[in-house]
Length: 99
Ligand SMILES: [Zn+2]
Image 1 (spheres, rainbow, N blue to C red):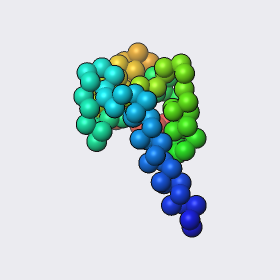
Image 2 (tube, helix red, strand yellow):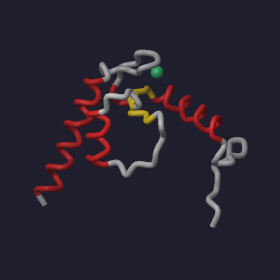
Image 3 (tube, rainbow, N blue to C red):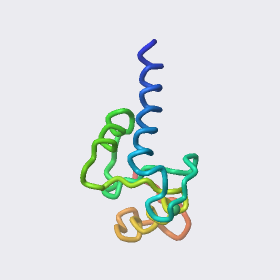
Image 4 (cartoon, rainbow, N blue to C red):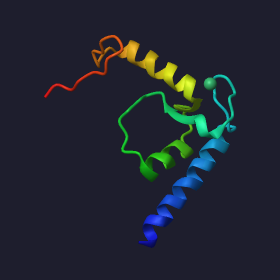
């Protein structure tokens, strides 16, 4: 049980360090309210999340992770979707999985 709490606490600290590493602001516009800042993975690989992911973000040297505000995250997601066309989205509707 103490593990769970420790892990949550560690997660919070990691988020804090990640924000600090990225100057606590959106990489695009400099928006700096932490409540609306999100880590963006430019490669958009599927990740499990959790501590391993946070460590990867924190230790990354390649610049693939950026800190974005909610607005720019939305824009980045849309652009990624437009570039990929894997998902086969129809206008404004969420894609459904085959099966
Ligand atoms: Zn922004």
